[in-house]
Amino acid sequence: MSTKKVIVTIAPTGGMATQAQNPNLPITPEEIARDTYDCYNAGASVVAIHARRASDGLATCDPNVYRDINERVRAKCDIVINNSTGGGVHGDMIGEASDGQWEILWEERLKGMEAGAEMCTLDATTIIASFEGKELMMNTSPSRSRRLAEMMRERGIKPEWEVFSPTHIVQDLATLLKEGFDETPTYVNLVMGVHKGFQNAMPYSPRNLQFMVDCLPEDCIFGASGIGPAQTPTAVNSLLLGGHVRTGLEDNLYYRQGELATNQMLIERVVRLVREMGYEPATPAEARQILGLPLKNVAVQPDFALA
Image (cartoon, rainbow, N blue to C red; front, side, top):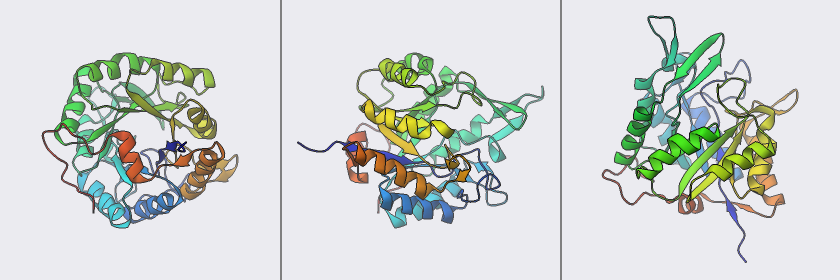
């Protein structure tokens, strides 16, 4: 009987935290590529990349920055590259409207698809993120969700559907899947524990995660992301439910209370959990097989090939 393979995703940077909060946070292309390679060697098979500006380390979806990161990562290893179309809560990603309301800018988010990644995050939902005294709307209306899905399909990009509550699954995700905007298997990232900063997000509990898994459409596979102290319990619970796991400084800056983490520390811990539960981390090649990569039915192939 073969050992089950688990996709382990490393999210090294994110679009929110700063090096003032944790000096181990990688923000330059060189730093992100270095941490990604170290985590690949420790068992990661997918990297969820957010880009940062060279000037001040704040968030951007500039495709030139993404391309620099992607090329540096690909020169080191064959890990699956997943670029964000959420961007972040500062830097290039936000703007203030004439009425004083702040928004995560739609036009900037679209740029995340232009650096040839195999996967991109697709947040098919509208949320309000509270950050540093600002309320930031991430407006991903049904038409915008459809546009993201169309653009990914045209570019041969596999969506990683990020959902924060059961409604995101049964409304936005289910609608777009019914319209044929992904090839099976569908990969869904269930984000747990970000409710203090993201309106309509779900806190982590075993019952909440179980309910979200129960809401998934057919032909879905899932991973789970626990934010902050929910990170390790969410990973264990996801494994118990047959899912995959994610870790990294994007989601959690601490190894334990009072001790700042590194990406390497976090990936080593989650890989130990995977193995202690009798599974084995998937290699990038195995992860591509599980995810259905490369995509088959696409009009345009991505412009960034594996070395």
